[in-house]
Length: 533
Image (cartoon, rainbow, N blue to C red):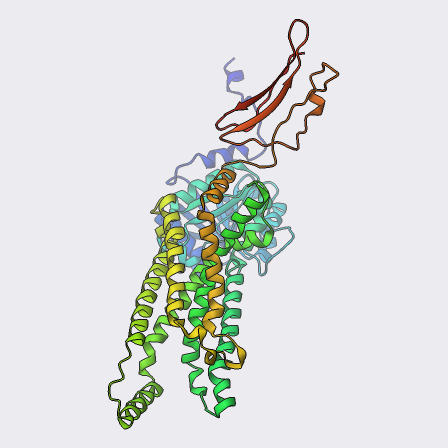
C-alpha cells in the first residue's frame, strides 16, 4: 500500500520533474548558466550575481575569459555548465547554434533562454528561437532579453528600458524566466507562444517606425516654406530691383520657416481627432473602423507634436540671435543716418510698438504651453497623472497652445494681408498660407462645442447608433405573431430613450387594440417584446 501511494498518478516525460523542480527553486539555490563569453554574457553575469544568483559560464576556452567575469561567477567548459545549470542563457550568435548540438543530452529537460537577434527584419519565419527549439526538441526554449542591451544590464533597469518581452510554448519555463526578470528588477511582458518570437526579434531592428511619417512631413513642410520664402524675400528683390539678399538664406529665411512648420505640425496633431469625430457623426456609430491612414495618423500624434515643439524652440533661438548679426547692425546704423539726414530723429511708431509687444507676448505664452505639452508626453511624467489630468493637458491646454500660436501669427500679419504690395509675384504672404489649417481646426473644434453636435457625439461615443431600431408589425388579416416581419437592420435604440411602435392583436375574449408606447429606458442595448399567441 505505501508503494502504491508513493507512485505518481501522472507520468511526466523525461526531464519533466527536473524542469518543475527548477522552477520551484529559490534564487539562492537556482544555478544559472550562460553559454557564451561576449559582452552581453559578461553584463548578464554581473547582473545575475548582483541579483543573488549563482552563475556558471560555459566557454570553449575557459582560461582565456576567466578574468573578464565576476569572481562569484564560475567560468568552465560548455559541457560542465550545461550539466550543472538549471536554466541556461544561450548567448551565442544564431549562426553558431549548431556548435552546441553536442550538448543536447545535457540540456534535455532544461530551460534555454535565447537572447539572439537577427541582422535584418524578417517578414517570415522561422525565427532564431524556433530554429533553436528544433535543434533541442527535448529542451524548453524561451525567447527573451534580446531587447535589453549590455549597457542596461550593467547599469540596471533604472537607466534603461524595464520591459523584457518573453514567449515560449512551455508555461512553466516562461514562468521561471519571469521570476528571474522580476528578481533582476525588470518587468516581464508575456507575448504568448514561441510563434511570437519573430516579432520580438524584429523589435530591436526597427528604426523609429512611429517617427517616419512625422519627420518626413516636417521636412517636406520645411522645404516648401523655405523655397516659398526664398522666392518672396530673395528672388523677388533681385528680379525687380537687382538687390542682393542672399545673406538672408542662412538665418532670416530659416527663422521665418520654422514657425510656419511648427504651426502646421501642431494643427496636424488635432486635425485627425476632428476628422474622426465628424466621421462618427456622419456614420452615426462608433463601431465602424476608421481608414488605415487615419488610424496611423491618430497613433502618431505625439510625434507630430514633438516635431512642432522642436521647430518652435528653434524659432525662439533663431529670433534671439537676430540682433547678433552684422547685417542687423549695419541696417540699424543706416536707418539712424537716414533719419538724421531727413530731419526726423524721432522714429517712434506707436502702432508698430504695440504690434511687436503683443506679438512677442503671445508667442512666449504659446511656447510655454507647448513646453508643458512636451513635458507631459514623457512616459515618466504621464505615469504620475490620471487620465482626466492627462486629457486636460493634452486636449484643453493643447487647443489653448494652438490658439495662442494662431494669434501670434495673426498679430505678426496685422494688416499686411490687405496691402497689395505684399503679394510678390502674385504670391500671398506666408502667414496667410500658414493660417489656413489652424483656423480650420479651431473652427471645427468650435463646431463640436455646439450643444446639438456635442450632445449627439457624446451619445455616439457611449454606444448609441442611429441605424438601429426594432419595429414589430402584425398583418391585418392574420393573427400570427408577426415575428417574420421584423426588420432587424433598422434598429434605433438610444441609451436614454427608445420608441417602439407595436400593434397588438389579441385572440379569443381579448379585443383588438392598437397603441403607441413610449419606452424610456437607460443603459439599454436591446429590447424584446413577446406578443401573445
